[in-house]
Amino acid sequence: MQKLPELLRSELAALTAKPESELDFSDMPATKEQDWQGAVRGKFYRPVKKQLTVRIDADVLAWLKSQGKGYQSRLNDILRAAMIDKGRHR
Image 1 (cartoon, helix red, strand yellow):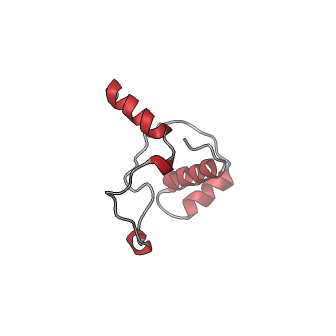
Image 2 (cartoon, one colour):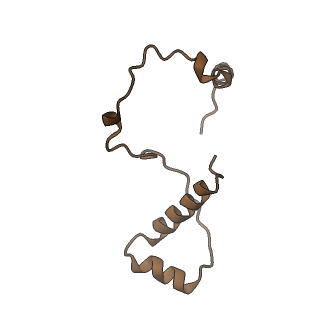
């Protein structure tokens, strides 16, 4: 991952510090409900994967595998949902 140049970092920090009421959205058209039909959150987000060894109860693993191919991805999805639900997502 490439570091942002210091000038850009300071500009982004200044923009982030402003309240939304001070931001100029005049060059952005308003969106309508229909604009969001079919939208998917995180479609292009690809987090870095880490390989590890983990011990899972046999019945839990059997349940995950019983739902077909992709049990590791399903396990990751379940863990991510729990993480977001607990408010620990950065």
